Length: 236
Image (cartoon, rainbow, N blue to C red):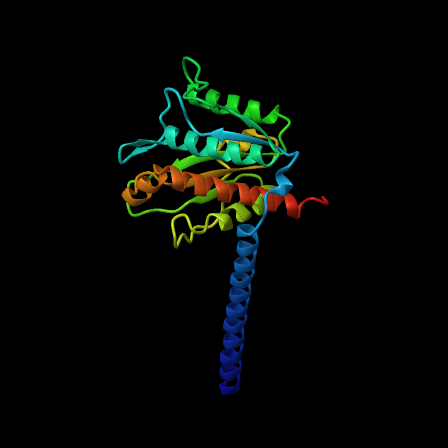
């Protein structure tokens, strides 16, 4: 019995050690990939077709918090991102470029708005899409940009984008997350991600999201994530 107990303890130590080694390796890999993303030039964007969806708009303000409306922040960031992509040779298709929506009268207006956006994306000829949003929750302490994806095939792109936004805000530890209930992600037929750029209900983060220079930094990092994705998949 004593021998079995010793063996069990040794086995437990081996398992714990193995888990620690794997965790360290993953963190190291993430660090170097993150460094690669940050240093990525944007040349791989040339010739690409990318669809951008600034969330909400028109009668749909989206989330509200600290005097801000989500629809305004998402449009500002998406337009900045569009300018970066175009400046580096990409063609950009926008689901909206102003304060408009695709709501229909009667039941299902919101769903119809989302399905129209999906239709624009699906028929755009784009190679991928990015839907830009702001998060909101009653717990005002919550903060941090987070990437959501639907189809498992989009996990790689989502994880790249999440690493690119690790510093938004500094110390952000959120991970890319799969969500099969997001209508836009379910209705689109091309690769894509939904970017929650931060919590509009967190006062500190809301102030950042309202700042044009912070919006520009967010747009720059999303562009780098897309460029890195294309550079890594150039031969596929």
